Length: 118
Image (cartoon, rainbow, N blue to C red; front, side, top):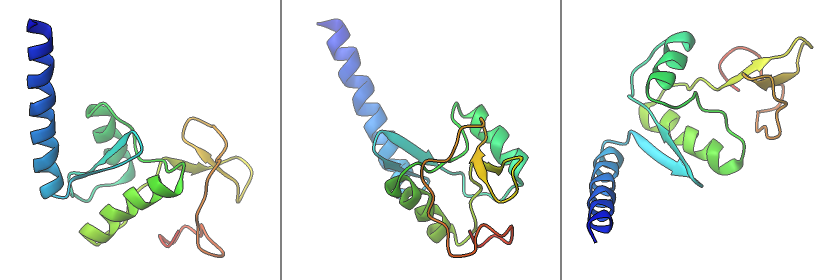
């Protein structure tokens, strides 16, 4: 049927595009989430805006697999990554940008310190 053919064509095109992006090392995935980068350095607010423009959000790891997906970009591009996490009104306590409590963390001892080594 026509709808089935269109669906298969779209799936094929998406798979090809994802393949190209994987070759360029600009996407990876964990579970059902796709993590992407343009590989460019920017400040936090620019990063946040670019993520929104792309229809997504800044990476906020909620599992070891998602953390590994973000680390993939850090290692590939030899740079840091911003996370969708902020310090709450309680010093030393962190939360997601929407105010939700963190359910997963994987920081080094004595981190986060604000020195980019989290």
